[in-house]
Length: 87
Image 1 (cartoon, one colour):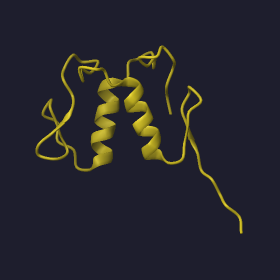
Image 2 (cartoon, rainbow, N blue to C red):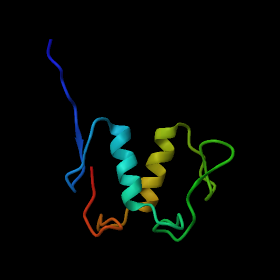
Image 3 (cartoon, one colour):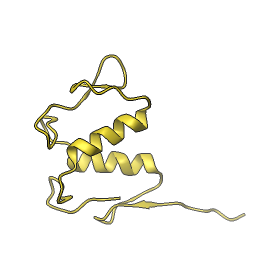
């Protein structure tokens, strides 16, 4: 039996076993402590589910994650640890 491993890599060298794990890594690297995005607004999931504090409503969890990445990732791709992070 052959086992096939699929990894998804970040520019910092982090290897995730699936796309969701890579997204979690990127959100951890870029989300500010006060949940403020690069646009200066607070972005955090609120009620009802799949709604952002900024008013954005997502159709799926992946859509909400994409929204968060759009607003938290700075143009230079540098995370809070001063390393470049990108999928």
